Amino acid sequence: MEDDVMNRVTAAVQSGQAGDRTTARESLEAIWTEVEQGGGDAFHRCVIAHFLADLQDDDRAELMWDERALAAVASVTDERAQEYDESLQVRGFMPSLYLSLADDHRRLGDADRAHEFLGKARTVSDALGDDAYGELVRSGLEKIGRALTDGSTDRLPSH
Image (cartoon, rainbow, N blue to C red; front, side, top):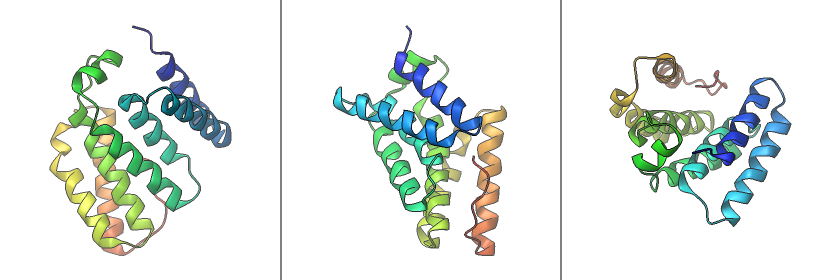
């Protein structure tokens, strides 16, 4: 089944990846508002919030969107995710969601919360596939772990 919301989310994300972060952010915020007003499909909310977090220029705003993604995923079922892509399982979302929160807290100077979320990400990292996405998240786990050890609060490449 065609998912118009996800098609628009994909287009916005591609715009951001091409360097037009402002347009991507504005597009995703508009889709977020639309989804919220329409009853709020949890799968859409999770995906939109996760991508919106990466488009924020402010660390606290990024944390807010990552927290929204984590809150939304609690209501997403495998069946709902598989309506979009039959290979998806909600457990596979968790390493990236936790990693994002670990990175947010690290950059905001809250090492305890960063370690907490990094630990959660590592605990569920077995859900990652042996593919480019899995490698990207595993690499992020290593980078955030090293940054926490070094005490760095610098922004690291997206994961």
